[in-house]
Amino acid sequence: MTSIETSTSQTRNLTGSMVSCVVPAYNEHDNLGLLLPRLQAVLIALGLSWEIIVVDDGSRDATATLMTAWIKNPGFRYVQLSRNFGKEPAITAGIEAAAGDAVLILDADLQHPPELLPEMLKRWQAGVDMVYAVRAHRDDESFSKRWGTKLFYSLLKSSRGVKVPPHAGDFRLMDRTVVDALLRLPERKRFMKGLYAWVGFQTESIQYVPDARIHGESRFSALTLLRLALAGLMSFTTWPLRLVSFFGFVVSICSFAYGLYIVVDYLLYKNPVDGWPTIVTTLLFFSGINLMSLGIVGEYIAGIFDEVKGRPLYIVRQSVGQSFKQLDR
Image 1 (spheres, rainbow, N blue to C red):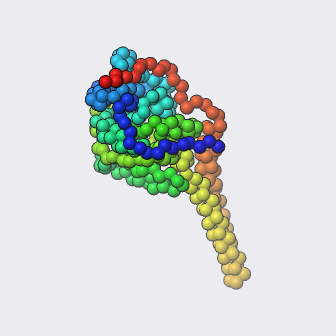
Image 2: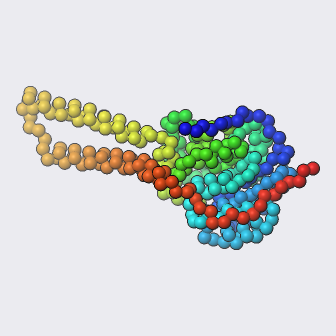
Image 3: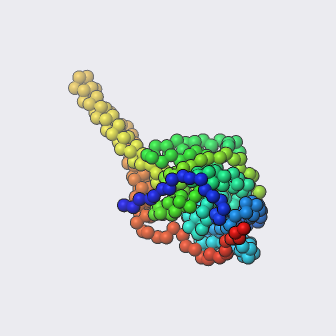
């Protein structure tokens, strides 16, 4: 078993440091055209070495054409995956390609304001290993989504030793030690919010209000969010399995008590035992419980199956561009 060494927090010097910005994108051509100039202006104002890494997660729009023009400028890099692998693998591809001392992750849909980067860097410079942005409110979301988010994080709290902060997403700045720790985690079905919490380190939150998406619609449908939630629960908790065991124990006790009641009732009062309706109802009930239990166990087995195959998390079609190196003064 290998261990991951963590560094002691200390004040960092920005002089000579490099900042990497990882932007996973899937069919975000129009939004990237607005985000990249804003992000470039923020980075230039910092006076540091920097790079913007756009990870194209199998886009079918004109993202490749757009990035062909941008990578001619120093500081822009383009990592194109061979197909759509999903946001979690795309983030992993981006942080693996990043060479910065500090790595910022932000979405391409313009909802993560790049102007927060200087504030995040101040916290990082003061010794914080990971600075994550937390939504100030969720008033712009539907009631069902707010309720589902609250339920998900309440269920995730049962994970031993891992506390995933509610309302925190992928928008965060990480020190190189945190990035290196994340890259040493071998699992294929990655729930990044849980992995950020699992590696630990000194963390700090800042609040922000997400900007409105200007072009396009969110790629995260209700079904996609449900799959992501299930992946998170299966990766960081075992309570579904324990719940099935507990429920089976309770049902067994109830069945034993009911059987004892029937025997005593017949011996004392000679009441006839219920027949067809009782049998059919009982069989249907336990058939449903058995199928549900098998489904839960099957989800964990499917996760094991994905892990043991050992397939790469993603495949890079091309990686082009170069970082911007700030000359020493």
